Length: 241
Image 1 (cartoon, rainbow, N blue to C red):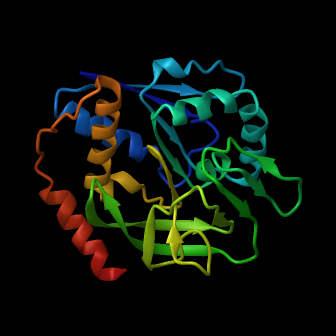
Image 2 (cartoon, rainbow, N blue to C red):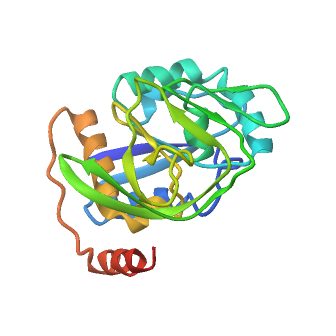
């Protein structure tokens, strides 16, 4: 078995160690003898969506987001089609914003996004920063997810986008609603950095399972790994949140 991931704009959208999410997927596949490869696609490069099983889109500052948003105009149709077909997306912070409808910065016109997530973001003077704890459903199981958020954008979900989870500690998408991230088909958007997946191996495995099922057309049982260290780290962080 094999999986191929497309890393969108790795040179421009990679804040707070977000590449650690890819490394986690790579290692957890390697430990199960699943071939895993990564290809970066950036500004001006052609995107061939048929080549990829998963997509990762990290965070970036406004300056980088303006550059990326302009390039996404040429790629948005392909990305939206991939999402509709059930391909797996993980988008963090700025990547989440640009896969949604639009982001409104303070000092420039709206940055129009791909529209995979029915959501929009508006810049604010308030910074949501600190550890975050959410509760969500992963494969029918209620699971707690921990991480770190650092954003001033306030994101609001539309009717066609469910939140990834309910905020127990921290802020989430905005300062009012206690909702975190967005979820559409097999696409996951979130503000959780840290990076997200090393601290939350259940979510990492869920993404791998979805990608294999989508590619091979059947549910594949993943070999269990020894996650004692990951679980210990999770519990330690949980105590200080």
